[in-house]
Amino acid sequence: MAADILRRLCLVTLLFSTMIALPAVAEQRSGGTGVEVMQAFSDAEAQKNAADDIDDQTKRIVMFVMGVPLLLLLIATAAFGVAMGVYDKPVFVPHLVCAGLSLTLAAAHAVVGLVWFYPF
Image (cartoon, rainbow, N blue to C red; front, top):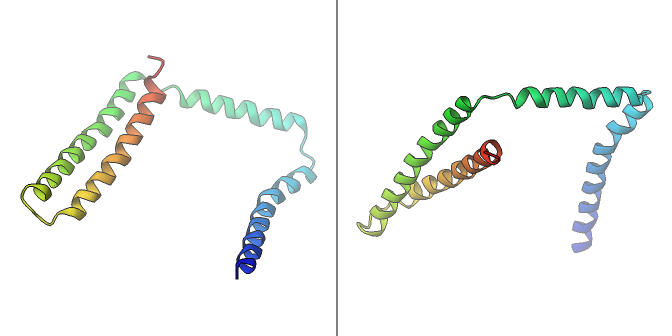
């Protein structure tokens, strides 16, 4: 039984590795030159610089738009927690959903804040 599972796992791994390697082999056979590779890197750098041109006002608006629902979800989570703990209301699922959404939005808010505003 364990050997069969191990054999299937090896086959799936082999399948995925060939799916990753085959496009690179096909591109290499098509005659790609070093100049084309360098051009792709310079194009990617130009696109990256264009993406960094967001002004501070837009960044602050995005952070505010993310922060308002985060604050509302935190208040709802706390309210459901109090209703459940103090008043014995059956609101565990809404409390859990609000807590999960709060955690997800807080993580996204923190990442965006660090990426945009860390160097001040």
